[in-house]
Length: 486
Image (tube, rainbow, N blue to C red; front, side, top):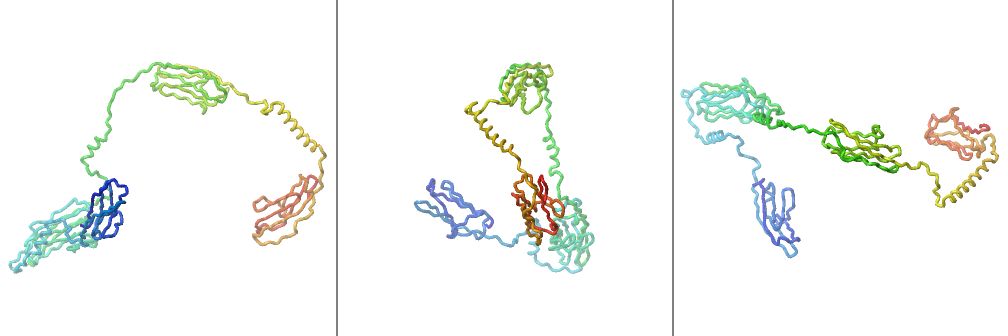
């Protein structure tokens, strides 16, 4: 049937052939593997599984086994029966209603009763009220009315006095919400079926039976409670008590005798350490009782508490006591004392650290030839400095007042964003005391990345990358030294 699973299997030899491969075909066309098709080959056991078969899967399936020696095939025929696109089966769960409908179709029409022989309607079974219905559930109202074989008998349903247009596709509430309400009348059996109850379905429902002689009514009260979308109550309220008992932690009262520890005692003492400046120092000892939780370890040097520092690392673990000092100095030398204290008393042990210092300054020559080589180096240095001292002793050269051999261009006419370049030549260009200053409209030109000034052996320049209106004015270049300015 369509939607079911198909499974094919076969066995092939030789089992251990590493070159064996398999191909699957459907109606002579190689089968394309997909999520619905699964093949497997394991030690000669070959399978093909088809998930959720459809009519298009019908045909002849062939498995071909191929190796270097030859090939073999095995075929099987498959037919998938399609299901109808429209489901004609009844979805109503009531088997009694189905039988009543079939009886209605097969019954023989009766001779109409004369008016003088007709009886007024009468409910032999009235509608039942429902006071505690939950939202989302279903409701079936049913009753029994006589005469059951009266062809003129008609049934009408009312909610709060308003007639319900029930029947096939009848509506409850706003009467525009789908086919939630259906009514039937068959051989005196009257039903009203409401699915998907809502709070608005609450009210007084009345069934009215009418024929040519008279009428009869049956009434019931329906109450639907709104159900919150979040269910916060327990699904099994009776089990909450047992769950609470199981989850409650059991406290067992265990009376243990408090252990009694003696006064501390060192079973191994600190050792004396002698090292060189820059080395590490390590002290260690053992103390009992090792399991005393009140045991406290203190360290001191020369009778003073050991200051906290990154170079000191103290440790105490189950009676093992140690102290490490990294990169020792001569100032770290002294008597180190370890004191163990508990509720009974205290005990101590001491060890000495002697750190030999190294010289801070080295006056010996590092020259490979020793003192003789050092003297040659000193002689060369004296000759070098004597030459410069002679030049410095010569008379200093005097320079004249600065003057421009080529002044700045008198005027410039530029467009916005054009570059500006000014240059001039000034003497004496060898004067080391010669300084250059630039002015704009009498004010010192501010330093900015847009302005670039240079002075190189008498050549003075000013460059402006992009000129704006605010850059207009009188630019002045001032050169000055110890003698004067221009």
